[in-house]
Image (cartoon, rainbow, N blue to C red; front, side, top):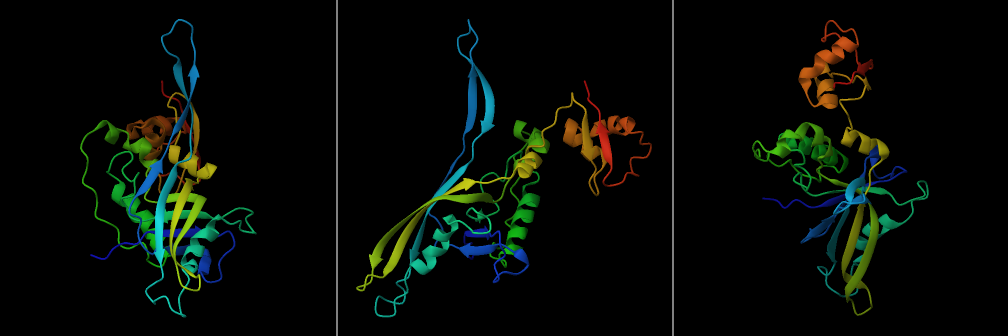
Length: 280
């Protein structure tokens, strides 16, 4: 079985002339990390009420997740003579990702991809995991000229658990890659040629999660059935799908149809704005 290489997709603000159609530029690591660490935290505020044994906990916000790992690079295959290849020809490709891109006024955004079974692929249950994996890896493979490899086989279902029951509402938060920016990088050079050319290096990389406001709102799918909503109908979307999104129950589609005077739910036009009434 061929080893799948981890890759970093670079989403340059200004199109790279070497990559057509604005596709992200893939940077393959020389050797896969032997381990990596994911760090995610949530911030809570304490509400103190006199007479209680402990304060109430109020969720404030989530904090950006961090992914950190070490990358190893070596260019001693050609020997250490006069024709040595500096290891910086490889490490500088990673180091440049923390530099400011002139047209963006900030470093570029990145996507770290290794496998469709990246941690977070089973959030909300495994029922739609293969579909999400195929979509993510397929898009990455197109952008990276197939560097991401074939999609892994589907993960067996995890049974009727409470997490499965939340699949419809948590499914948008599944992931098969890590969208991020390079937060910090430490370069350690450990071998040099007699002329002082660096030939071996270890990079300690820290990536910080990056999501736009639109991305987060689409993932969270915040909805309260006790409030009235306005929903823009998408191509191919049904009233049952609208009801599932806002009520967590596709069987409530009749409430949406009644609120909008829809007699035939099969005759609805994409782009229409639907009133989604509250359900007590």
